[in-house]
Image 1 (cartoon, rainbow, N blue to C red):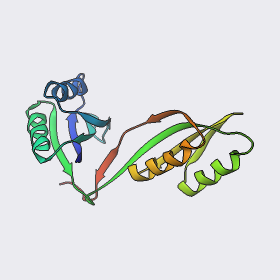
Image 2 (image 1 turned 90 degrees about the horizontal axis):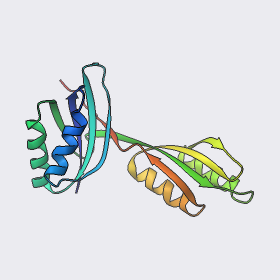
Image 3 (image 1 turned 135 degrees about the vertical axis):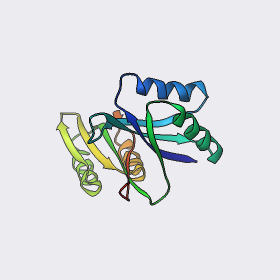
Image 4 (image 1 turned 30 degrees about the vertical axis):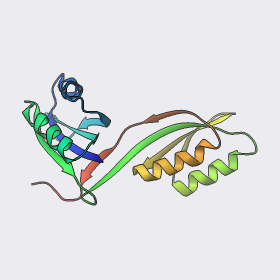
Length: 160
């Protein structure tokens, strides 16, 4: 089972290293991690996707709460949050496939951000299911490179 955690941390040097070290030291794996600033320049928000059952999630949460730089942890459950990911991918094209790739991009609201003679650089954003479906379709044309941001998530409810 995959869990999405939103972790508010102090914006200090070494926080990411300490959190990653906690995970590796206890044998927990991070599927994706994304870190960015918040409205408060003293804090950052980490979105972590971890794999494991409820026992693993409980242990991860307890260990994170022990770290001095962690302010709060929110475990997102289904339908409690909105998530997105950004993917850049280089897809091979030729005269016969250009229009088909462009049509698929239109359907998925993906953007072609760079055009070269033999490839398109495509930007697509959305939830993981949309991204995975788009990538499966692009594989038939040939994906030569991919960069993924990892998931960012926000609660549907305002905290406080």
